[in-house]
Image (cartoon, rainbow, N blue to C red; front, top):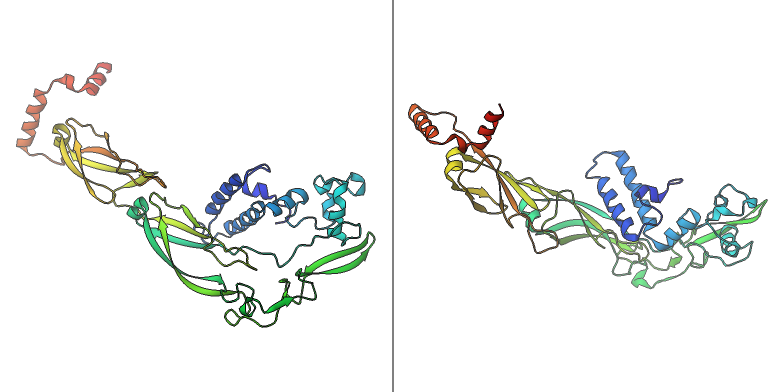
Length: 381
């Protein structure tokens, strides 16, 4: 992720609000979702970048560090000078004044320049991974909503040790090597003085704790793999390719961190006769030419019912008739879209002699002025 701008990755500016950042992330996460891009390595890589960018810009501390130092972990080394050297006014520190140098250099040089030390704990809480699930819905289920069950295996915080990995959740001590920080420091002499680097503590593996006796239920991992049957309420009006996010239903977090989310990619099956656009549905209705001339009542399909449609006398082909409130449910509202029936007047494939004579007599009896379009065409001709 080096040298890549997180704001550019999400397509937002540096002054974007939290809601704008979330909206951009959701749009890109859907665009590069693996279910929509099977086998696409480039999309998978872009999704990783999008997830990384969002994990930083959605965290206030990480975002502040990134805005100030170009790294979510704060100042990391000499790269922060921005190539300007000591004579450049230290502009590479993102606007830090001289009062900030104690803290900045204490992170880089381990306090050689004075100031307080604030190390990043490797044992910090971390949110669990998200779970992606693909769900197929019938046309009717998506239109009006439905309850669905999902069966899956996921990691969960061990209830016996509360995620600590220690027996009864209490059988551990503070790591003596790192004093509970999860990191150890190593000093090196350089032309600039003594430089202190930090790394994960090899004794406690970054947890800051030494377990005396492991939890027998999770073998000291702090998480267990569980099979769960989860009932999900799918709201009416949900659309094809829409992603439904269930907060906290993903994999367990680390060191007591929150669980990830479950992202459900909705796939809606097609209807045999209806087509959906937004919350409205459309159907093509063929009628005979006599029904068009005389008017009629015809049966048409609704989403989950059969409807009776009144065809007025002298209905022209291409006429669209509206049936109010017979579309899909509008998402999160107690309201419904409409059904639109497009009329197509169909002529018979053949006529016998008697039928032809009847129609010829009918044609003679109808005034030419009744055919406004034909009359206008002939007048122009």
